[in-house]
Image (cartoon, rainbow, N blue to C red; front, side, top):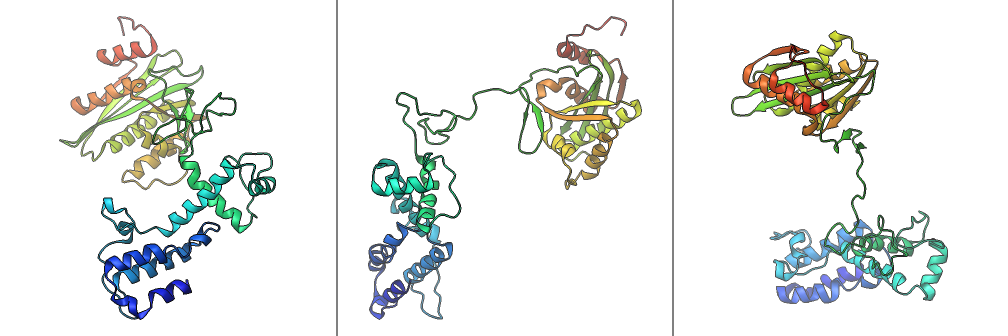
Length: 369
């Protein structure tokens, strides 16, 4: 750092043109730490201070007097064909040099250096898929830093396939996503938010014996601000126990309609004294809110918190996120409420909803229903 500062503060270089400064920065300033950066990982503080000295020299800053920097450093580091100057990002350049060291260990595994490092840091593994100890030397920590960059672009050649792990190795020749994303389909999956989903089901499924299933859905029209809430409760035989819908006035968003549908349906279930309940909705935000232990911060938090309290009144309760195809009956009821008003059908939903029920559970309705 001192050597570089001394070179840039030489009085005769204050009168250099921008072309001369560019050559000086690329040929001298950014070349000085090249050897050290090829062996060790430079600290973030060092990289920031080093780049600041280059920026000050480029724009002509003097001690106690700062001039206008007309272009951001991120733009100066772009290639000239993209409108930049071609200066190096010190941190990225450091990582690239260290990645080259890691690549040499892969390309020359029989070299003395590679054999020594392998015996100490990965004696029984591969350098690309080994978790290393935290008490390594500074030189090896630099190689680990380079490996982070190398792993993003290295690709495995299949060959005879004996040493290829198709789920872990990057072997698909394309620009992004070199790994296989998924090889199997799960009926139900749990994502990072803890929301259980039945995304592979394209139609409604009956609950287990002793359980009832409540499907809820909301409908919203942005042009007139009206919404609708629909819900239907069915037993393990697919029989409709309760079907109802309600119109929502002055509805702000579709999420509000979905939350209101959840609350109206759960309040009705409390009156029916249902014990074991499965709740299904095609609105991910509502399902996530009902499963979350944290207090909701949305505009309709009061509705969601009351609905969440209702779920605790059941002996057993599960909340699932399903696809729209598995929630067609509740969707039809919500649309009906938005256009026609409030209805409570009990066990006898309207004709067009009965058709959807028949398609869902294969249950034939008798004429006297």
